[in-house]
Picture 1 (cartoon, one colour):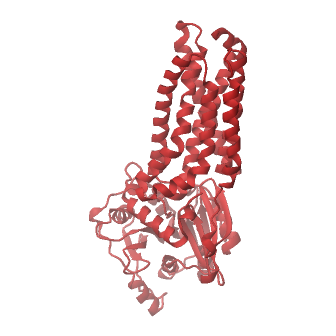
Picture 2 (picture 1 turned 90 degrees about the horizontal axis):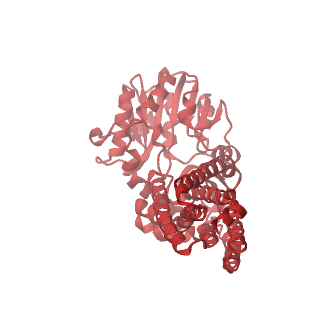
Picture 3 (picture 1 turned 90 degrees about the vertical axis):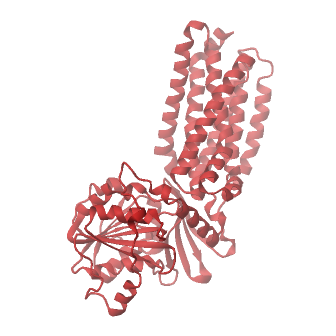
Length: 516
């Protein structure tokens, strides 16, 4: 019987099966971040949850698949694959309900339980394929080691190819929901093909019928899955002007006409806010940053790391005639800044990862604005001694680094303290300001330089000096750590901030904004 399998279905067919299911595992795992991150943030907790759930599911799948293959002899592979397809098609349909249901659990538990409910079933079924194929491939006991090794090697190769195809080609072109639907359909086709071989070549009675019935169930889910594509409407208060899924998240331009407001959001982060009528920025911390060129004379060239809606670049040009280079990792954000917020580059408009691109820039810059805050989590690799040292090398001798950091300002805030201590390791002088005096949760703006920073500069008007002095903040460094590439607990320290920010955003827009 087994020889017939290898002769008819062919070992190549079995290897193709484990190749495709191996690729499916990685596609589902990676897409998990795209579905959960808008709600819980693209944080270490989300990645840890997805990786853990994937490993748990595969372990269970390997074990159960091995037991089933021994008891069922050579039947059931097609059923395993078609059930995996159905669970895959259910993922985009169930995402909204699962995320909203797990919200009360908090960031860490909510992310883990969401990943477990959404992805465990399909990944477990896919994990069962490998042991089943090994069972079907065994013709003699002596070859079991090489066969098992080959099957798992091909499955791993499929995972590699699936990862590369998804990251390099599918993500830039197709939405996450559409990719999952396509994957489910591919698995259904694969299951039917396997069912034909089970019935026609293995002599399994009615292998096609149960697989075909389940395949029909899966295909009947397609309209519901497509209709479940949830587009945020705003409940009549807000309007979606633009939305686009990029490699880094879901970017939206949202308007509230009644209050003359336009927002730029990326997943669970508000990265720009302006008046619709005048186009002026409404973010308080940017008013502080807009005064910095007056503190040091003859500033002419600036660098902004984290473009947002582009208001700071416009302010520097309009008020000070400065040429500004910008660094933005997300092309969807850069496009939205140009189209909906009036941003016009005056220098290089670079789209790419800041840590890489900084190493290729040529200074000197008189002002560097470091504004890479996100609601879910900070890009912690941009807040280390190593990164700040790179930025320091790009500054002119009298240049100033302005770093925006969002968090809690209590004396026990280890996150804020850590950022201050890290800056202290690189720059001899620093000052800190808060955007909204009196609020514990705030934007904190650090100014760092080789020279002392005098906020009573002659370049500022008297009322501007008083306004700025009212926002000076003394950071308690006792609780902090120096952040390095080797040791960086900032994401863990900012867990409370991430949860608070998410609930603030939900209170403003509603939970539907964060659900895909």
